[in-house]
Image (tube, rainbow, N blue to C red; front, side, top):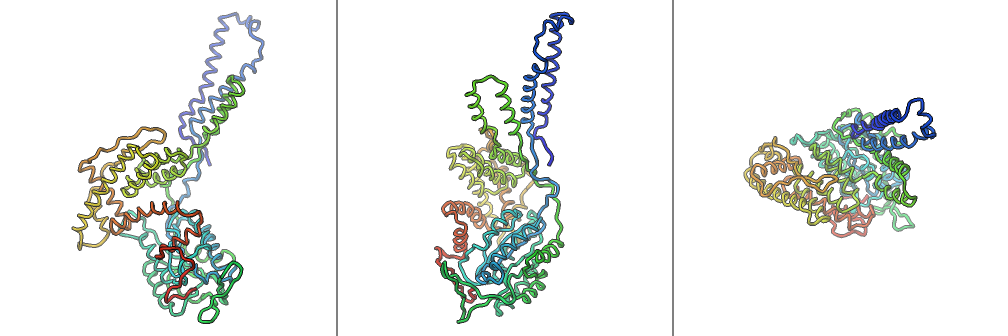
Length: 577
């Protein structure tokens, strides 16, 4: 890592002490020559040693240098731009968490081993978007496809603690659900979204009823026809083991079906057939990394190559607080103060030299906003909201976050964020103005959209939002003219309501483009998807800090259970393991 400077011109002031000392030496020498002859100067000069006279000026020079370095803003890159990669594939992990995965023929259990295998895969994967689907009788999306591997790693640790509300193992529904999740990511009708190749990695014990095998083969064929190759990791042994059921905290019973103990076995041959049918590969779980070497290194990775990206924004670690701290200590050494005042000033100064994390995130957000990189601005302003320690800071970050959503044409999200900002500053005029502006544009957008949808009924296929946005001029000037600065209470000018026709059409056009980039089929679907974020935040605040309880209740709601279940329910026509 190489040291960089935020404002390198401040380093020119490093030369000031040397210039000042040269001028002072010349001026002092000239005065001495006027005072006495050169031969008499040693007799009239003070007897203080020369090096002692230079100590105090040298310390002042050091103080000046430290201040100049502080203002120049030394910093280190947190990560190098070179080698950063864009995702070039999407991998959806489909993990079997049914009862049979509690079998102990693979220690500690099949499900716990699956959790370790997911973690092992994540340590190999790069340049990929990863998602996780878990299933028993019904599939659930645990992690949407994302390039944030740290988030995937965090949620994958919860796999062996998940409790699904229904019993059984419906692999057909799970693979079909994975196909639906991956289909929007490969939407070729929208050129704005990146089209990445996708694949499914299925972690299962292969304990599939014989009457379901034909239907499962048909489902895998559909995946192959949709260009979704299927890679399978079999977890279990051919001999198998009885499925345990914990009745209470002290005893373990075995699962019975039709009066017999159910013994779950790994069906490697059938899984091998499915992988061939699905244009993928199969491997049983191994104690070393040879299973993922076969599936990922020799399979998935060799098919795709990482794409070097120059669009990633460089992140920095600021170092200015260290020279500032040294300068403050040096200043107290040079000035004459009573000891108790010196100690008081040091204590007061300590909080000032700490890196301002919220301000740093706000500054990065403002920088991205002014360069019209609104996705990065949303990222930084969101970070500023969580890092803020005061209501004013939090409201300021939310205000700018709402502006960033607004610039993307995501008016529903912008309106909600502006309302959140007003909970911290209810009478803040710029936020109130932006809220009214967003509501006005959203109303007009819905009106125009409803009118044009009636005209489009029965006329052609494709994304209706995209058709409408393409019919408008998208090369108009940017609307990024309002917002809030990082460190001041001054605000940029807001557009006045009512807007003229040109300004209204331009903003409505932004909203139509945003809708065209979404997968919503209509405005109501889009609004519900945006409002669900706010509902989720409220639900999280009301729920105990217990991840297992959270996921259990969430899955129950997804499967239509209005109240918490005491025990998982069986599903008709699905074997309960």
